[in-house]
Amino acid sequence: MTEGSRNITRQKLSRRSVLAGFGAGASYLAMPWVARAQDEIIRIGFPTPLTGPFAAEARDQVKCAALAVKQFNDKGGINGRKVELLVRDDKLNGGEAATRTLELIEKDKVHAIVGALSSAVQLAVNEVTRARGIIYVSISQSDTINEVKDFSKYTFHEALNPHMTTAAVARHSFKKGNKVAHLVADYAYGHEMLRGFKRAQAQIGAETVGEILHPFGAADYSTFMPRLRSMRPGILCISNFGRDQANSIKQAVDFGMKQQMKIVVPVLLHNQRLAVGPDVYEGVVGGANYYWGLESGNPSAKAFNDAYRDGNRNAIPTDYGAYGYTGVSSLLLAMQAAGGTDTEKVITALEDLKYDVAKGPQQYRKCDHQSVQSVLVLESKKAASMKSEVDLFDIVANEPASTDLLRSCSELGFPA
Image: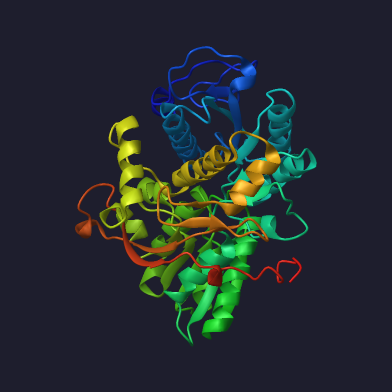
């Protein structure tokens, strides 16, 4: 946390105290600047869970979002206006996120919001932003946020969603006749991933032999493993996030599950793989929005990685960190195209935007404002195959950006 804060130049403080490192009231311009009138600065609010079990991913998002801001400011900002990133800790809590978002809008006068790292929390942020006519670019997986009941013209979803993620992973992991057991976190993320996997299974002809829900933040999975093993699956799908993923996979390995079945996850998390090492994750397959190894054949990934390395002691950006970069970059590109921060003009620019900043071509689908983008399918390497400490995964597939991976607009509830 403190290393990340050293890599982002802090230019001024908000009215609240700044916590150590990335604090609840932190405000960043991400480059030296000459003092200007406050109304000339473009302010982007960035709520994310800097404390709690998703903190590692959240800190990476802040670093990458700050990099996007710095790059625009280094080129003169938006029509000469500097951009400021106002980071707030939502504590992975919907009520806290709503409060911080309301403060960003009413007290800090932000022009738009980017952020949140939970299916449920982003819906809380979205409730506030759409009620006040503020653009919100969400950068965490959710199916619900694109459905008619939660959507608004101000709502944009830059992240992958569970439907497209599970469809890609299943296509490269399941075969007709496979028996699949599911261990699922009992909250929105887990439920939506389970729904996506079961839908993909039905299309492929794989059979669900059982599903077990576990509480969020569980430390002990030992009671679940014998039950899962008794189902005799060929594939164990573990749909959870953050430390839950690392803990559950580790305990599955301790129970010898990997010798009896293949472990598949919807999202293969960079930080969690680093936390528990190659032996635990060896052979685990999952999806990703981004992996730094794309740089060998993708110029935009190479440019993104190089820029990140320059500001972060030669480190590489992570999967969820990349969302901070692509989400903020898409918003700023739209503001640039719109010639400023007029909300209606920026919405139109986002809807028309075609961008490639880190991984290949992306664009927002007009009916639901979902970012159409590629989906990676990765497999965790064994230790002997790693060429460096960050050589974590093999790219099994890179599904190109296509609306074929998405639910149709009519299925989401939009007029045909």
